[in-house]
Length: 116
Image (cartoon, rainbow, N blue to C red):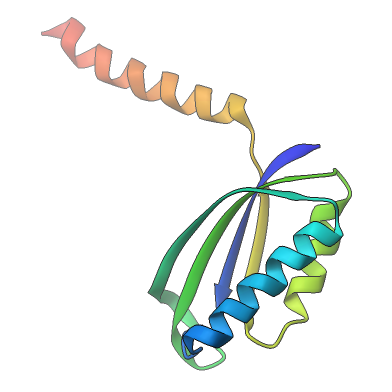
Protein backbone atom coordinates (compact mmCIF):
# COMPACT_ATOMS: atom_id res chain seq x y z
CA UNK A 1 0.00 0.00 0.00
CA UNK A 2 1.27 3.44 -0.96
CA UNK A 3 0.24 6.97 -0.07
CA UNK A 4 -1.40 9.10 -2.77
CA UNK A 5 -2.86 12.57 -3.20
CA UNK A 6 -6.26 12.65 -4.91
CA UNK A 7 -7.25 16.06 -6.29
CA UNK A 8 -10.88 16.39 -7.36
CA UNK A 9 -12.56 19.41 -8.92
CA UNK A 10 -16.35 19.36 -8.64
CA UNK A 11 -19.02 21.49 -10.28
CA UNK A 12 -19.14 24.78 -8.33
CA UNK A 13 -22.94 25.08 -8.67
CA UNK A 14 -23.71 22.12 -6.39
CA UNK A 15 -25.92 22.64 -3.34
CA UNK A 16 -24.69 21.56 0.10
CA UNK A 17 -26.78 18.38 -0.14
CA UNK A 18 -25.40 17.51 -3.59
CA UNK A 19 -21.87 18.26 -2.41
CA UNK A 20 -22.34 15.91 0.52
CA UNK A 21 -23.58 13.18 -1.82
CA UNK A 22 -20.55 13.62 -4.09
CA UNK A 23 -18.15 13.42 -1.13
CA UNK A 24 -19.91 10.27 0.08
CA UNK A 25 -19.69 8.76 -3.42
CA UNK A 26 -15.97 9.53 -3.60
CA UNK A 27 -15.41 7.97 -0.16
CA UNK A 28 -17.40 4.88 -1.24
CA UNK A 29 -15.23 4.50 -4.36
CA UNK A 30 -12.07 4.76 -2.24
CA UNK A 31 -13.37 2.06 0.13
CA UNK A 32 -14.39 -0.08 -2.84
CA UNK A 33 -10.74 -0.26 -3.89
CA UNK A 34 -9.68 -1.11 -0.31
CA UNK A 35 -8.31 2.38 0.24
CA UNK A 36 -8.12 4.47 3.37
CA UNK A 37 -8.62 8.24 3.61
CA UNK A 38 -5.83 9.72 5.73
CA UNK A 39 -6.98 13.34 5.53
CA UNK A 40 -9.22 15.65 3.53
CA UNK A 41 -8.60 19.29 2.65
CA UNK A 42 -11.48 21.26 1.13
CA UNK A 43 -10.43 24.43 -0.63
CA UNK A 44 -13.94 25.37 -1.72
CA UNK A 45 -14.70 27.33 -4.90
CA UNK A 46 -11.57 28.57 -6.67
CA UNK A 47 -10.99 30.13 -10.06
CA UNK A 48 -9.77 27.71 -12.74
CA UNK A 49 -6.74 28.42 -14.91
CA UNK A 50 -8.90 27.79 -17.99
CA UNK A 51 -12.62 27.13 -18.49
CA UNK A 52 -13.84 23.56 -18.07
CA UNK A 53 -17.34 22.83 -19.39
CA UNK A 54 -17.74 26.61 -19.88
CA UNK A 55 -17.24 27.17 -16.13
CA UNK A 56 -14.54 29.45 -14.72
CA UNK A 57 -14.67 28.08 -11.15
CA UNK A 58 -14.54 24.68 -9.52
CA UNK A 59 -14.93 23.21 -6.03
CA UNK A 60 -11.56 21.75 -4.99
CA UNK A 61 -11.14 18.80 -2.62
CA UNK A 62 -7.75 17.24 -1.84
CA UNK A 63 -7.62 13.75 -0.30
CA UNK A 64 -4.55 12.03 1.15
CA UNK A 65 -5.05 8.30 0.65
CA UNK A 66 -3.47 4.94 1.23
CA UNK A 67 -4.27 2.63 -1.70
CA UNK A 68 -3.06 -0.65 -3.17
CA UNK A 69 -0.65 -0.15 -6.06
CA UNK A 70 -3.15 -1.11 -8.80
CA UNK A 71 -6.07 1.00 -7.50
CA UNK A 72 -5.25 4.61 -8.53
CA UNK A 73 -5.91 4.18 -12.24
CA UNK A 74 -9.20 2.36 -11.67
CA UNK A 75 -10.27 4.87 -9.03
CA UNK A 76 -9.57 7.82 -11.35
CA UNK A 77 -11.49 6.15 -14.18
CA UNK A 78 -14.54 5.54 -11.97
CA UNK A 79 -14.52 9.08 -10.58
CA UNK A 80 -14.32 10.61 -14.06
CA UNK A 81 -17.59 8.85 -14.94
CA UNK A 82 -19.49 10.93 -12.37
CA UNK A 83 -21.42 13.87 -13.86
CA UNK A 84 -20.41 16.46 -11.25
CA UNK A 85 -16.69 15.62 -11.28
CA UNK A 86 -14.87 18.00 -13.63
CA UNK A 87 -11.24 16.85 -13.10
CA UNK A 88 -9.37 14.10 -11.24
CA UNK A 89 -5.64 13.86 -10.57
CA UNK A 90 -3.97 11.15 -8.49
CA UNK A 91 -0.28 11.44 -7.66
CA UNK A 92 1.88 9.17 -5.56
CA UNK A 93 3.26 10.75 -2.43
CA UNK A 94 7.04 10.37 -2.47
CA UNK A 95 8.71 11.34 0.81
CA UNK A 96 12.15 11.40 -0.82
CA UNK A 97 10.97 14.22 -3.11
CA UNK A 98 9.82 16.28 -0.14
CA UNK A 99 13.17 15.74 1.58
CA UNK A 100 15.07 16.67 -1.56
CA UNK A 101 13.07 19.87 -2.05
CA UNK A 102 13.49 20.92 1.58
CA UNK A 103 17.26 20.24 1.49
CA UNK A 104 17.57 22.28 -1.73
CA UNK A 105 15.64 25.11 -0.10
CA UNK A 106 17.84 24.95 3.01
CA UNK A 107 20.98 24.99 0.86
CA UNK A 108 19.64 28.05 -0.96
CA UNK A 109 19.08 29.85 2.33
CA UNK A 110 22.52 29.00 3.71
CA UNK A 111 24.43 30.19 0.64
CA UNK A 112 23.72 33.95 1.03
CA UNK A 113 24.44 33.80 4.78
CA UNK A 114 27.84 32.16 4.15
CA UNK A 115 28.89 34.83 1.63
CA UNK A 116 27.93 37.74 3.88
